[in-house]
Length: 261
Length: 307
Image 1: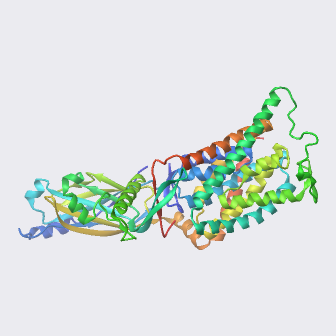
Image 2 (image 1 turned 180 degrees about the vertical axis):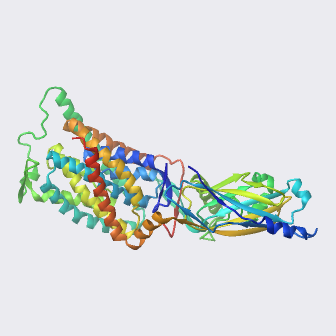
Image 3 (image 1 turned 60 degrees about the horizontal axis):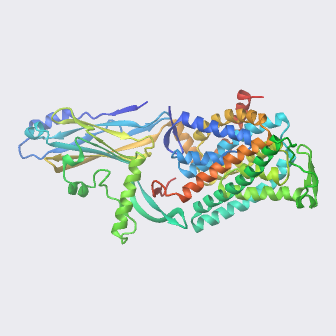
């Protein structure tokens, strides 16, 4: 049951007014808007698609007609330090031997693009912008560590994140609705972290990066889930007592209902 | 059908959890083990963070042990006196165990220590039980009387002072080995994060010579308290008990426990012991496999400053 949340932006009127006095030399600009600044997670949440609307200001009609504008939309989760551990063989056993810590790693990272990555711009450009699951920059805690090791652990980190679905990409997830307007669909994984997420949009013209814009989005737990979470933090002992009593009650009821003797 | 877990902060499938709970509950009711040594690895395998899996596993174990113990009370196969003595020893043991746990964690490589302890203990206990029960089964099939207590087979345990009579178990032994056994199991349980049923059951059968049918109920009785203690400690210190996750597991678990207790009644003592031995050995092999075979992925991630 894919819960579909539409976050709309009504920038169309604004744009038409701006477009009328557009001059040839005016550079393009990109804007995105969210109709809501918060998404609540309810008990039936099983991942969702988030739709973000946006527009290009002052597009060149020729470029637009030839489809040479490209847009990449990113929804980046809150950042945390992460330890990457590597198992090694010691006395025939596989145990954690080496580790590297990375600072400010986004917990989740969802990308939506107009076309495949290699068709939009150059690898160098992605690297400079730290854009895409394969290019996002991971800052190592130990700056003087061997670059080869850092490279190896960075790749492992990206690979693990992609395997759990927290880092994902949707090629063709950004579609133009008109010359100016576009719609981007990004994927919220079932284990998407709660907290402040940042939606960012990047505009490319003929493979050259032009402009970036961003907006904030809070992902929160809704009523019941939030109450349980808060209770476990603020009243740990009482919460534990409740959990034990609930277990005993369930055991007793189970005995009444499923009795087999 | 998806359900969102508020503490684990992820969405999971309800039916997978129900099935998991039911399977473990069945084994729990049948063998008198809490199932902690099964449910925790299963949850971790299902991508639940290990800290939450350990704490929530303990919570769900209360429900299935309680349900199973009630079935044994009804049948008169629960020795309250013996269970209480084991529990007194157990609480002392687990308090010391919790201290050693913290010490090991500060040194590092706690996970490795736990894995090795699991493999060694499960392997030894399972192996010994398997040999004994297969021999007993062979004796029965060849027509000999299946007796656990051979005449004159009193070991050193029966020479100790402070003897106490346990009517339900038809036992007259010193209280010292009972308290000692409880303490040893409490200690291991605290370090390994389990109720200790899989050590308790064979120890009661082979060391104290308690009849197999009484062992199951008595072990469940003791596990309820150990698991409740563990749940409270985790809820207070680490806030890692997910009641939503525990509740779904419990619902499956209590249903399974009743069917399991029924199934256990139909089996003879030595058959029950052979099956439990097979289960314990299977878990030991699985853990040894993880330890000694090159993993599919060498890397693992741990987020800091959160769960």
